[in-house]
Image 1: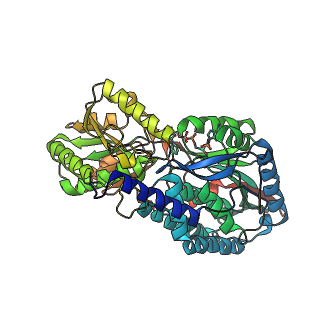
Image 2: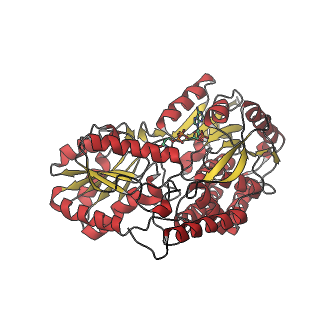
Image 3: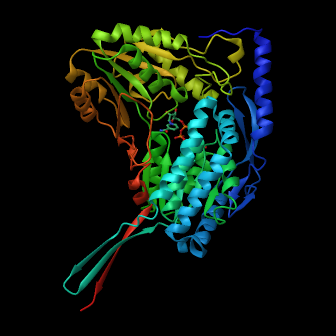
Amino acid sequence: MASHPGSAEDRRNDVLERHRETADAVVPERTSLYIGGEFVESAGGETFATTDPTTNQELASVARGREADIDRAVDAAWEAFETEWSGSSPGDRQRVLLEIADAIEDNADELARLETLDNGKPITEARIDVNSAAEQFRYFAGIVRENGGETMTEGSRYGQVISEPYGVVAQVIPWNFPLLMASWKLAPALAAGNCTVLKPAEQTPLSALRLAELLDGIVPDGVVNVVTGFGEEAGDPLTRHPDVRKVAFTGSTAVGKQVMTNAAENVTDVTLELGGKSPVVVFSDVDVPNAVQLITAAIFYNTGECCEAGSRLFVHEDVADDVLDGLVDAIAGMEIGDPLREETDLGPKVSTAQVDRTLEYLEAAQDAGGRFLTGGDRPDDEVLSEGCYVEPTLIEGLEHDHTAVQEEIFGPVLEVFRWSDYETMMELANDVDYGLAGGVITDDITQANRAARDIEAGYIWINSYHDLVPGLPFGGYKQSGIGRELSADTLDHYRQTKTINLSLG
Ligand code: NDP
């Protein structure tokens, strides 16, 4: 890992000062709940702190919403739906969505810095998130006028099949891509004509609150409501609320199951985007440096805090030594440090709880005889000691049924398996409860296509990873979720079908 001039204390002070100055410039002033077009305190007046995972300093005190606040937000959303938004035309909504995209782009630099402060992701990656967030609104603005629907005549009978919005939807999002996940949820919900109550993750509420400020003045009051708070106190009452007609959730599979149970109480439609433990399959014909670059991106992008991260590597034995040597070298050259610096490749994880969770898996892997080719602990650098850092880690030699292999670590940890027999390898690649994504690296199109079809997952990259294109549906098989995002299918998840059977005879 790269070394730097200057004493550790000087460098630590540099980081603290950079973060303090950035926080002064970009942390939003209004950190209360956004309900009915107004920023309001929580009913109980309680707050909680959101911290910067690079410095562990408090960034802001944020309103702690509970059931009474959820009730208020759901009521405000229904009022907005009944008085205004249900009467909006696709053209009205298209204009609103485009204005939101412009507002995000106009404030891109500030939003990216805010996201880096609150989440810890490298600034270069935060900028990609912000651009993609704007793209979401543009994509759904593009398809909002495609009303779809069908008609059918049979004798004197004239049938129409139309789509209508649900009314009020509940949306709960995680901390790994806070602004982007807010956009993945808001854009299709609004495009389909719904009003929404959004609950951001407790670790990263700030970009959603800043987005609410930007929406104020573009979106009619009450169409979008943001209730910050904790899962059990705000997420739970929101997802079991009897007046919510659709629930959309992104997060862990464990909480996803709970959310599904909540939604079942009212037979509410639910879509879930949950965890993953995605395989990356490397064939023997690969160009090793190119494969190393793809594998590195697949696991270490966003510090491994990606639901689709390629976290299990299946590398053909003919190239395994070269690929693993290449990975160890690539990791040694990674810049781990202050995510606000342009040079940084790997920032901190989102919280100390997430560091502890990752280290527990690493300890279990060590106890089970896993060989650490590199990493395995917090970085040995005084400057990083205050932050939530974990070294990029490569582990070989674990049994595939070990917990560290089967469960989502959600950190910069890659588990390696060598293979020679395709069928045996594919059996292992599919031997997890998850099925979100997968990667295939080879120049042989026939092998690539076969592997892409054999991997049991909803999204497969061949010779790339992570790039998601609006229009190509994203979502999971097995316990990775229900429903698809990023595509026209998503609009249908936010609409219900009505059949009008008219007898003219
Ligand atoms: P969670 O699934 O707990 O968090 C996701 C969202 O759900 C947050 O807004 C959270 O609120 C909310 N939530 C928590 N409990 C409830 C509940 N009972 N009802 C409704 N909403 C609830 O993820 P964690 O933050 O606990 O992370 C744990 C693990 O989950 C990670 O290590 C990772 O493996 C996985 N994960 C997967 C993600 C993905 O994209 N697939 C994203 C995030 C995590 P709050 O945070 O405010 O408590």
